[in-house]
Image 1 (cartoon, rainbow, N blue to C red):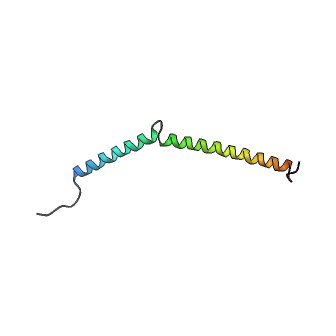
Image 2 (image 1 turned 120 degrees about the vertical axis):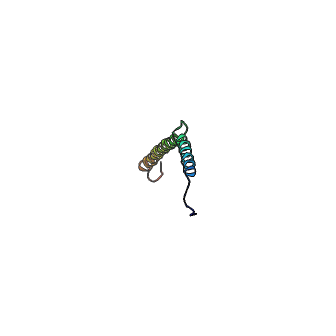
Image 3 (image 1 turned 90 degrees about the vertical axis):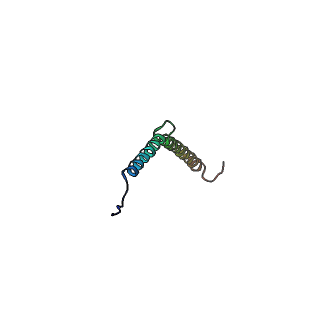
Length: 73
């Protein structure tokens, strides 16, 4: 009798089921209210706010230097 090599249908079905479960978990983590996408959007908003604050501070420092370049009153 010749031995056959390969995967069985049961192993293939179990693998597909595991992949579907992992996909569902990953999508749930990404799409939920406090999921990965929402956290990323919050981080981008914070970053943009800090960039604006830094621009304002640089502009303020530039104005102070321009108005009084030698630090003398």
